[in-house]
Image (cartoon, rainbow, N blue to C red; front, side, top):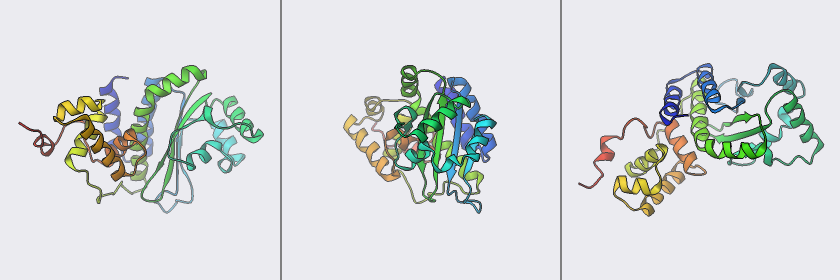
Amino acid sequence: MHRDDFFDLIDQLSRANRIDVASDTLGRLLSDWGLHNSAYLGFNMPTPTAERPLLSATYSAEWQKHYAQKAYIDIDPIVRSGFGGILPVDWSEIDRSDPIVRKFFGEAQELDVGSQGLSLPMRGRHGEFALFTVTWKGLEPEWLKIKEALLRDLMLFAWNFHAVALRSCGVGLDEKKIRLPPREASCLRWKALGKTDEDIARILSISPHTVRFHLEAARSRLNTSNTTHTVAKALALGLINLSYEPTSLLQLRPD
């Protein structure tokens, strides 16, 4: 997918207030990347119906029915792995020594969920937890190459999809107390546009070490796990804009 096309999808998400609209955007992402299925699962969402998970998925009706009838939400190893950390969960790395887990994955593949999968956990300040998943049909060696190429963009997309889910519940990502200093915002914006630390240093006339300092400071400020996660959250919160760099940031550059 061309970078401009991807940023167009992010822009569409930033303007969406309903899950069905975001799901249409997600469908384009799956098609362009050759992915098989996707799912968004939100728990403890800030809404009167918070006791029920918020689900948007492209899985077959047979799998969704089977999943519900078997109460798999209680034993789902993907959900458990997601709850247990903040890093992406590659399904191929989940321990399948337990017969129940092997049965779960076997039935999922029989019902066309996908042979490979990646789930991205997200935790918000409202106490919610969400899991954004994509799947692919193919062998593991090829999947590893695809995952490496797509992971960064998937994290950006996942956090912006989560922002739509919150807005659909009537709650925005209201984190008005968070403010990024101009340098941190500028470094994150250029990271989102695919620039390396060295590229950003040249653009802003600072050292690569200073760039990394600002990126780490922003990561700490936003309570994120890595730079990609930080960029994704900053985009979802509207703290940076890919279309332009504010005049206040441009004024920081030396003449």
